[in-house]
Length: 367
Image (cartoon, rainbow, N blue to C red; front, side, top):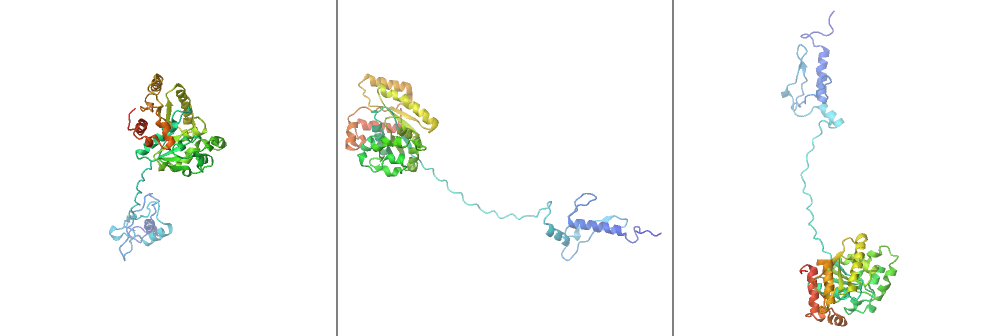
């Protein structure tokens, strides 16, 4: 009986013909060989006009691989068809041509930081210690050195306002309207030797009017924000109390200068002021601190004044300014003329003392 499949050397067996044809198809499709699990060899494309020659078996059943010279780099039509239907395979992602590097936008030039004013409050709940005198004359001394200065009168008595020749009863708007009615602080500023935010007797009722206001302790701080970049220094004169007006000043301030008359009762107020500052640091303004303690109305002829200064230096050390503000009639005469003592008597002892104090505050003097 004749065999269905002839031996090698005779007519090729259909099975032997199908195997290499199937393998050629696997190679063209890019599929792995199921028998070995190996990826098929990459099939180079034949030159233009030539078709790829499939591997054929030799006699004896061995498969003859394709000749590399018979293939070219272009993919076969079957492979192109499969790629068009399925897209690029995960193993061989389609190469992407990198885009030309585009120069990014030029970085914006760094904006210079705009300096804001240093806010200094002058506080002591003891009255008659030269708070208003110190606020005005130190502010004018700053201005003499080329600084832009705003002085704010937070005392209902309006002494700072009057000391610059402004009648508190004649102003249409005052710090009362700023604190209570949220008016712009620019509306109450008058230009004299320095800029003055005026007070009026209406401030006496400000604490009651603000009692139901949310955030009442920060009313002055909020009002100052729009003008901080317009000035180098803001000097705040406070009333002789530790009420809401003074708390507003301490909350808005960076530093506090404490004028102290060289007497026992005046120095006792320092302890209460320190307690108030401690509470404000905890609740409202953690950065506020005492810039210095200023001995005022010093009568160097008395032993009591000398002892008072010694007590201050023993307890507060270098916080006590080296400058001493001595008693002089010029402090009483200058407000009558509506000027500072630096303008009223520019070469006098009082004017020199406040110029020396300005150097200390600016960091150019030594204590």
